[in-house]
Image (tube, rainbow, N blue to C red; front, side, top):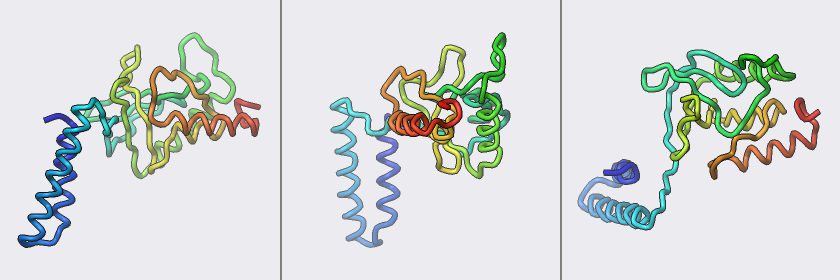
Length: 187
């Protein structure tokens, strides 16, 4: 059973558990289950992946690295995670001096992660690691996209776009505004 089929099965269980109990509810639930499975089967057969990301919930910050990298406990292992589609000024890169607004970007990221009630990582299906072996992820802090917040603050630029990423349009819009308003790195 592939991931889409598992998601459909889970969705079907959730929907049918909400239906009225009794024969009428069970019949309606069965019909609904058949419809959901048929839709997922059709999408898969036609190469359409309607669930294009994986999500990892309940992640714990283990270390701040810089403005666009942090270490999290993912599936019980400390894992270095590079934030997708942005670049912040350098603060820890060997052989590179600390760049203007690098400390501000690092502090913004670290404060957001340390004060988060929930951290959620979302991965693009076809682009999971970079050349250094770091996981590539969208970082959601209390349901806000951290990359977008960094770009809005003029502490990151949109960069390293190698694919049609899910949230790039949000970053590009935030970057345009930050540039127009000459915020931080765009001043």
